Length: 192
Image (tube, helix red, strand yellow):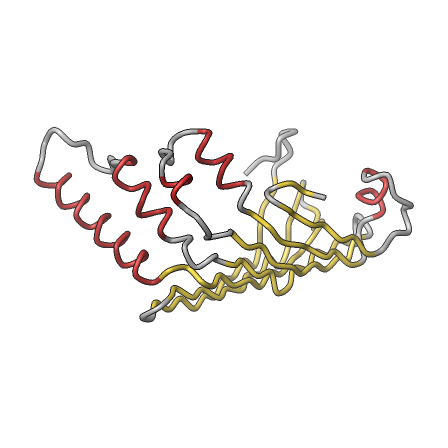
């Protein structure tokens, strides 16, 4: 792989574990990942770990989505005029919106990024929530339109706390380079 500037890089000792459950009420996901080493130009520059979970995704909506996708695949296989992988986004939009009715939460339990090369050993945690109240205005827009995504973004609220922030990030944000704790808040899709 190559970075934007063209330098080759590699990820080594990558691992991921996940637990996904669909019960009567909701889909639950918990995952952990690790990158043992990010190597650029033959030199190890960073490593990291991540633990997160996704909760409150409406279970009935997930089952409806699975059935819809299965039906779409069967129809595609039986009909030569429909290209494989074609998605009927107009029919799928209300199904996707229904996933949000229980106000799903993405919980970042921990994120750790370490780099001796850059003097970084940062940790983060936080939570984001998609507001599932009054979904009719969202469902009225097709998932393929920018208006849908703008409306969806305004439903995002949450916070992320970064400890031992890299000095360069603090400077970029107009803070003292020795600021070690940064609080990021998202209110109606806007970072604060």
